[in-house]
Image 1 (cartoon, helix red, strand yellow):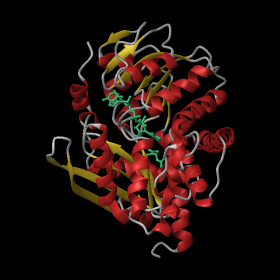
Image 2: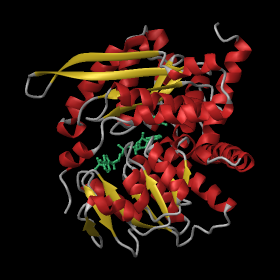
Image 3: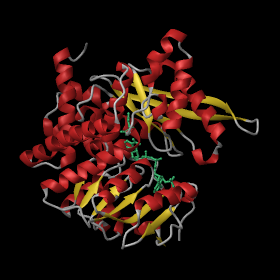
Image 4: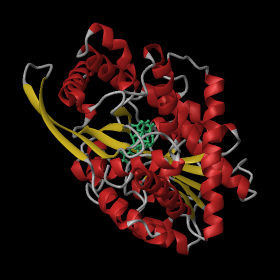
Length: 431
Ligand SMILES: NC(=O)C1=CN([C@@H]2O[C@H](COP(=O)(O)OP(=O)(O)OC[C@H]3O[C@@H](n4cnc5c(N)ncnc54)[C@H](OP(=O)(O)O)[C@@H]3O)[C@@H](O)[C@H]2O)C=CC1
Ligand SMILES: O=C(O)CCC(=O)C(=O)O
């Protein structure tokens, strides 16, 4: 039986992501013998902004919203990271997500630091015009705490190109006429017609797919006819499934906030996408699929498991149930540290979030560069550049993990943190 969306959202643990990222950071910093002063700096966030702002609803009443922007670190460049609209967003969740962005941008070799933000709310409850007003008021309230050379938001859960267009427009409208066009890159993930990048929509899912592909190549595994399950059929879940299906892999189970569907013979990805478009975003009721209890999702028979929704989904009990031989973390922070120990004992490999889903922020970097330089790149060129970057970073992490006999997460953390450590030491730790 499918749960209602509201009940399911209540099942998502609010706490834990910050503890998780801190444990991961502490493990890596011990393994690499991180400079203690730099460890102190990276253990805390640089800035944490909590904003209460009023918005008029369609019925004329005023509602107060709580928005966040946390800037973790900018040693390597401007803060960068998405905005999430979700009821479980709180300061600790945003701090954790901001830290993950710092490691992710560093690992990908980008000239960025890490940030994250969002609004604590369920966007499903609001009309489009209310969402526009909420977003514009939030952007106005953020003011110059964001900026094209300072902190550059992007889409995340329940935000999209439209959200970014509203933010860009609001931010630019606060500038003098001659300055406006210089500020287009205050956000990335914009619609293509408004300075967005061709392919930013698929960049994260393409990156997830590429990391699976390159992992499979190292292991001499053919992805054709391999089965996979996806939690979350939004931007990341859909595009990852799209690219995996293109190489002959078979989607056999999907879970979203409405419920879980399965078909061991395969769910056709494009038809499922079209079905969700016509059914308020829900996968439930898709023809030629069975609805199963949500608790059975992670125990499904499959080769590859792709969490592409929220954090803390792969817990200890679920880690014992997983049948897949590979977990590819499309989501940020989907696996708890305790669960990962169990997966390791069971020989299940994990492509960690900061590597697996980094295609999104690499795509954002391309968009930012295009806007900054007044250039326009074509889709083919962009996909080639994205592939090249993901391949290089994957190779570095995978091969280093083999040499050091470490898991890919610790290796990715060490590579990311070493780059930041180097920058601090070159500049002098206290500039
Ligand atoms: N967008 C990007 O570029 C990037 C995203 N990520 C990460 O990927 C993950 C997904 O983001 P994105 O695809 O952009 O977000 P979307 O909002 O596009 O999609 C989120 C998906 O998760 C589902 N979901 C929400 N709550 C639950 C739940 N309790 N159980 C099961 N499914 C649930 C949603 O279901 P429903 O539609 O029914 O609400 C939806 O299918 C996040 O962790 C995000 O941080 C990482 C890197 C970049
Ligand atoms: O594209 C970006 O700037 C960041 C996307 C994001 O929030 C993420 O990678 O988690």
